[in-house]
Amino acid sequence: MPVNTLILVDVQNVYYTTRQIFSCHFDYNRFWQSATQGKQITRAFAYAIDRGDRKQAEFQNILRAIGFTVKLKPFIQRSDGSAKGDWDVGIAVDALEMCDEADEVILVSGDGDFDLLVDALCRKGKYVHVFSVEKLTARSLIQAADQYTAIGPDLLLN
Image (cartoon, rainbow, N blue to C red; front, side):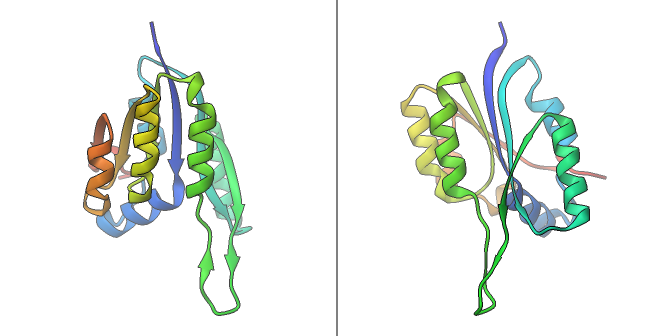
């Protein structure tokens, strides 16, 4: 019987960490093929920032075609020049609200703030599998997960 699985992808985190360490992009198709093998996907979300850019809209359409529901938050440029645009709270809320539909939660992010979320999901009896770029991932997040997969060449665009 397939495992009911919820997938949550922190698009900004994956974009910046794969670019910084590997100088290339995450392969969402390969990830989907690998991560969903033998599983029943209850829901799959990709959390991204909307800058109103055509190329970005095309990428979001690719994510939708793969099977993700894309959630967008506007990019906010502050008057002091700093920027804001992260989905940490939204990802955590969705994970906790939707985890009852799933036996497993796959989180694609290396953000150490998610160690608390992973602990909470595990206390609820969920199996949590984290994918991220290991060199830029908090040890606490790796240790909190039931399973950890480091993003490497097999999950990158050539």
